Length: 486
Image (cartoon, rainbow, N blue to C red; front, side):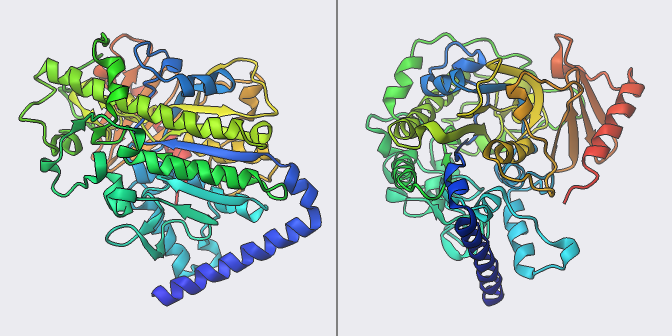
């Protein structure tokens, strides 16, 4: 199987090389004139940013990006878990709902399925086919560095075949991508999670935590890519924090030591059937026998350490943006900042993601395009992660792949906010659709949740029984949007 997989990958890679060669020979000037793309992916980042109206958060670098670009106030991911959400972003398609979605896609490529079942190119593969150098650093697909195997470093098991010219993860003191993924300061690798602290804040430079080394590598790659006048680049940079465990240098915690945090809205566990869960990912770490659902002081400590990780992530964004601004690519690079999903900080008595509530599904999306000055800096229309692929194609002058499910957001730069937009998400045995006024959640067992977003109760009062017509209408829209998912 490995030999077959390698052969297919090589064949597709050869095809890409031929297409790129023809494109460059036939139109090198056109390729050189196309804008570059810098895609910044941040893990577990809810819209807990100053530019999203969260005043106590220090996020000056992301705020500066938003000041020069377009901030999407209501961006929703397709799944509240890393792998499935990144599958949607990187393919522009609804589909896989598990963390293994991209590896499952890779297996279909390896099998060489017939034409009716061919796997469409990913977003980086599409840009590569059209003459771009594509590079990934950090956590962009589900596995940092984009490989499988016991330590996630097996080159024979690419997570995204044919997509990247270089797919990099400098693990440093954490030894390998698996160790980097859940690492704390100075090379501490997670073994049994109960022996690793759920949060930490040690003195030292950024490099004592995992993102420090990958940010330095991303800066190196940006400098190298921006020096090539003949080929545009697509550089994806994945930042780990604020993923669990919440570890960041002490200097980022200093801002929050005496900060007054707002009250958590709707903190109670639902009394009816929902996608509520017991926060297993969070609870399995060492919590010093404390539970934030019943210990208010501990809850505040958790929230402050999450905030410190947000500020640490913001600093990494600042480094890559500073490198871009000092390069010759500064005036010709589209920048996208995307959060792979949200994260509950006590809402509905959840500490984590993996629900179909608003807190798990809403995340930041900011796009800055050199040729587009948005009429309004903030857009409140509902958009989805699958929309990023066609948007970047249109902004770059590339044909939009006919295989995607998303729609270009370029019209938003001109102040065109379409009415009636909706976002679809899914996880395990339930699916949801979010409109401007409502959220509907449909469970495989048949029960439904309906929430009125114009009411103060938000997603704490299920109004499905009183509104069967709304349930029926939204369920029809949900089914229609997911009819062609693969």
